[in-house]
Amino acid sequence: MEDKKLTEKESLEVITSMIAQTKQRYIANGNILLMWGYLIVGMTALIWTLLVLTHNPSWNWLWFLIWIIGGTATPIMAKKEQRKRGVKNYSDTLSSRIWSTVGFSAIAATAICLAMLLVKGIDAWSSMFALALIIVPFVEIAQGIIIKERSLVAGGSIGLLAGLFTMACIAGHVALYATWFMPIFIVAFIAMMIVPGHILNSKARKAK
Image (tube, rainbow, N blue to C red; front, side, top):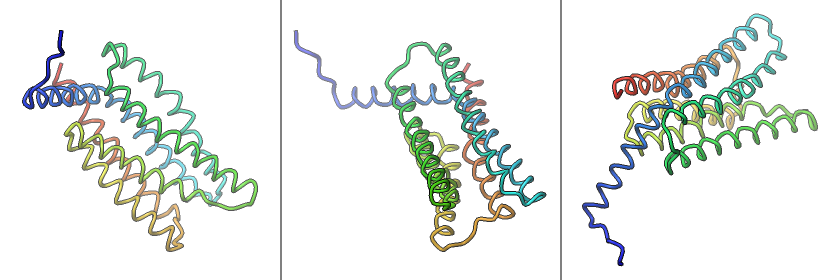
């Protein structure tokens, strides 16, 4: 028995259906986006306040709490969402692997910066800001384009502009002082994660 060949119209319908399904599944992940958004914004605001008030750089070690809290909460929330949605499809796997790559890149960058500090006494931590504002917005914009979600594209674009500005500052040897850079970082993550997260949640409630 020969396999039936799809016509061009049928192929487009299949692709459109897959994109729609992917969008509905991604919309269900609004809570994870919000968790990371509020975690990063809250921790950044806390560290910013402590640095401005005390001028003690030791408070920067609190950045590691983002990985501990977010890294613990994400798989728990992802499993909960997976039980609600049922069988994991190809789009779920692809999205998960893309964001896992972002996580692994950030962990690797953190290890490199820590090694440079401990071995050579070189402070390269500013590169972490550039990484967060380049790789995360890029992935978010890509997913927004794929599922046709404007809030992800718009939020990611704002974050990417902040990332390009950050890279220009680092290349131009402009110090990223907490007093003026932290607010930019906070605004970028509000635009990238908190606003789209609430929009996705609103769409998820309407879809029920």
